Image (tube, rainbow, N blue to C red; front, side, top):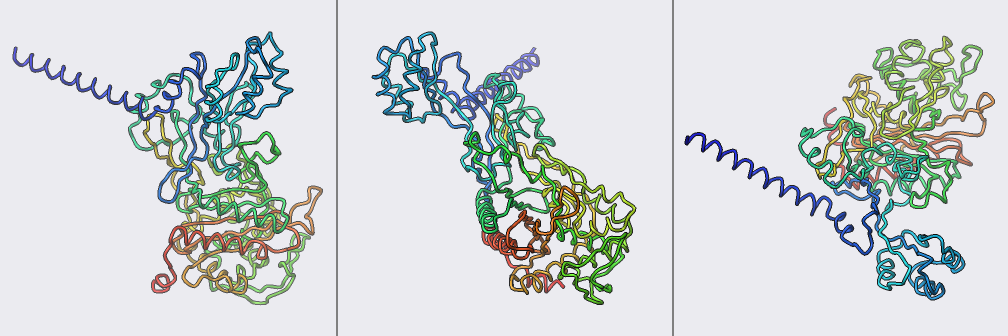
Length: 576
């Protein structure tokens, strides 16, 4: 009997404990997680029982100290409407209302004349102060209702990355571009009650990782974008684009070891707070939707492939004759000049087309093609942005040498900027390729945060091959770039420029239109950041060294200072 009594007592105690925990959790959910929602709903004078306030999760930037900064959120204000039948003195009503909100007399009088319509909206997105003031006037026939709408505190910064919310074909508010669209199912908070998902979120999937964020429950998206770095990047590319009158300028700053994108943008852009006034052709993101022939920055990969395959060493030489005939086509160095017998270093330092063609010939078609395919060329990266396309490398299925030689220096193959960044970042990651991504975590409505994973890095090159390539690229910056004038005495930087002719849709290439590119990483032997820059059709200049060297170095110095990256030259030299 005593044993049965003690058992029942334990059951009762456990039930009481669970009920108390449930009550505390419910109170936390009401007061903390959704306190703002309940505060709005408590304002009965503004929100009628049939009105459903718009709800959507937020998108956050992340500062270097982990502080979250709002990138996309909901603003709260008021909608002002009238019931024309109850407006007895339109002129007096107009005078009272126009003192607190922008209002056109003729449009107001026209609305007030529609006596058969009980609800005419005369103002939306009216701010807090004005809305409350209008409510306190208690004008007969004036309806004051709570409203929430999407707002982007950073304005045009990272606009193509964030996207925006607009009505879709079903007249439903939904993410239309960028992260807003890619993560719409996570951000779109269904009207199923504030407690609808709470306990399921809290107790289901208690592991700390979600593999696919889009399958997560409703919540907020936390990105790896640092707003301070994003602002600096925007300033640099806007200045560059304006200086050279380019048609387009873009940049990506990424952690090459994790694939986290720290900043990314392109100009021209738009302000998602006022997208109705923008050119819709700039809503999409060229970083994932457009492909470009990037030119000589691809030479880094050709050199790394040759070193990895063992067909060259850093000490190898070749005889540079300036121009060669291949399959009835002429391939030349950019200046048409022969160099004679030169070492591999000069292929990168002087950006020699014949040098990488030499390496490609030694690799052969199959090995060359295999390396470029292992680098992900011609495939989507898997970045968390909509409408991603993949590069075009069909020329590498040709039996002709000329297609492979052209590809070795970045012509005849076209990649998206993100695809190019993924491939090149393998040099900064010991030969392993990561998945570029923007979202770092999903914070569920319950307040629980789930960290995201993006798969294991894929090895393409050996550690030795990338170390040798990196050493050559450091030499490019130290001695060749601007005659050695951009060398940072305390910090090793590996980088190279690229200049590519732009294809003419009618065949061949334009003689006077170029795409300039620049890729680099630092500290070179233990990289924290990789930077890809490009500018399309800059005016008055021919080579990327003229347009993008200063922007790249400006971003590099900024990141070194902002993240307080310690000097590495002495430690590297001692290790050697």
